[in-house]
Image (cartoon, rainbow, N blue to C red; front, side):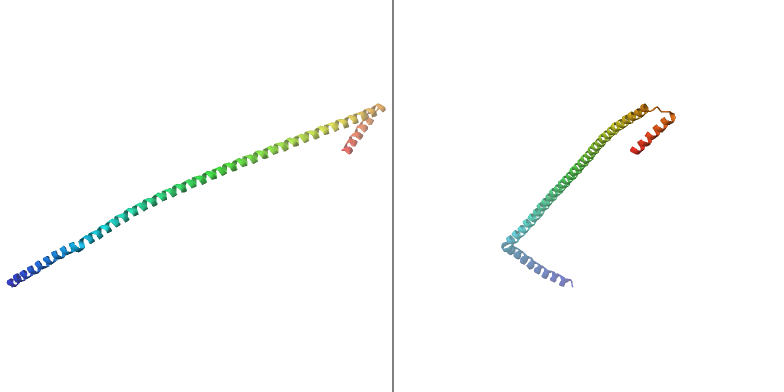
Length: 169
């Protein structure tokens, strides 16, 4: 049994030697024929992958830059909108104040005009009252002068003039 394994080992050593020599010849032929194209293809593939990675990185950087620009534009637009709103509020406040001021001025003018009209009517009423009192005084004086009055006549005369005043108004 032991001898068979030794013989088999020799057999296997020969086969192994043949396979190794065949492998080395195959590797030499591959080196002559296919090694340069395979390494060139692998290098090209490696370069393409590196370029794709660089390109993707550049595109990602550009996308981030564009996102920042858009965010900055959005922020600026929001600030502009806020400024427009503030300006509109201020203008509205100024208009409101102007309208209130105009209304106050108009009310003051109307009040002043009404006060002038009232004063004028009062002056006219006083003037009319003075004329009426003067004419009444003259009339009373003329009646007193034309007739000597006793106490009853005097009361009657005053009462008749008072009634006359009530009827005239």
